[in-house]
View 1 (cartoon, one colour):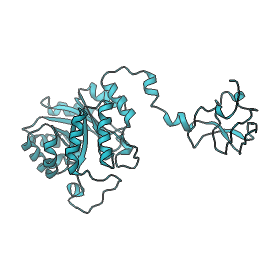
View 2 (tube, rainbow, N blue to C red):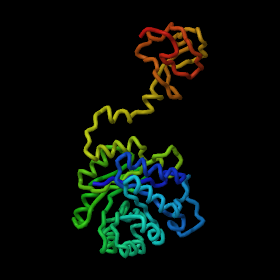
View 3 (cartoon, rainbow, N blue to C red):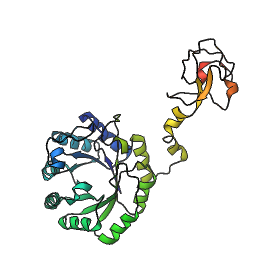
View 4 (tube, one colour):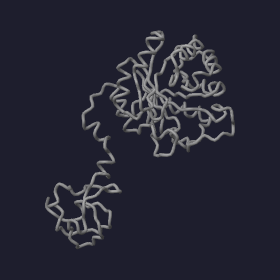
Amino acid sequence: MKIIAEIGSNWKTMDDCLMSIEKAKEAGANIVKFQLFDSFDLYGQPSLDIPGETPFLNAQWLPKLKEHAMENEIEFMCTGFSVARYNMIDPFVYRHKIASAEMTDINILEALNSIGKPVVMSTAGSSLDEIKSALAYLRRVPVTIMFCVGDYPAKIIDFRKLEQMKNYLGDSYSYGYSDHSIDVLNLPQKAKDLGCILIEKHVNFTTHKDTNDAGHSLNFEEFKLMCAKLRGEELTILDTEQYANVMMKKQYKRRFIATKEINIGDKFLLDYNVSIYRSNITWHDPVSTFRPCDLFNQISITYKKPGDVISYADFEGDW
């Protein structure tokens, strides 16, 4: 089984792309994948604006990206979205990827059949007959058929469709799973248990939150955890819990909050200058709301403004 880190549109500079290759390898991926297209490739209209904040990948970057992937001992992949793009990509890849929307483009299918390299074909939104028709055009190449749901993020994922595909199309093909959900552990593992030899997941290893794919991508820690699970590593509750409920633990949970200005030397008094509310800022070492005796009538040694969380560092005490 191989794991694909789909970088997709989660980058803004070449340095983002190079860093993402390194992070994909570090997290445990076998393959790192990019996308090469412009608006004409998708819509036949060169001036059409595509919503989002990510620029189009520069084809001149392909040699550098390939070289960097080789240096990091990870396979480089890049989806094309036209015959011309696949010809640009071909010198740099071992296998080609067909996105779900392009599966019905017979020009692309014929071109990849002529190139002769292995093909990974996504099938979201396609009927069994459409998939079978596409495979007829790819008769000269080995094909891995990727079960996926093309919604971003995917919410309804019924693996009975994968079983239906396998029964209908037979065992002449390999099968994989392109997971557009934001689930880290259960859905990828389910796909592996059903015999998928390729697992693809969107990832965002940058700090950018406004890229086109950011909303349905795993960060580095989440993707690393997924890879470990798929590799059969035993994960403890501590392994998983450190990446779960993150914002609840460090911000949203109700804590002791200053409701008035508290100056150095003031006492902390419940329902006078301190009460229990949600915080709209992150905090460190907050006073436990289950131990009000630790706080009240203590003397503040720091200045607190309304909205600040009260921490144990804000007073001297023996607790």
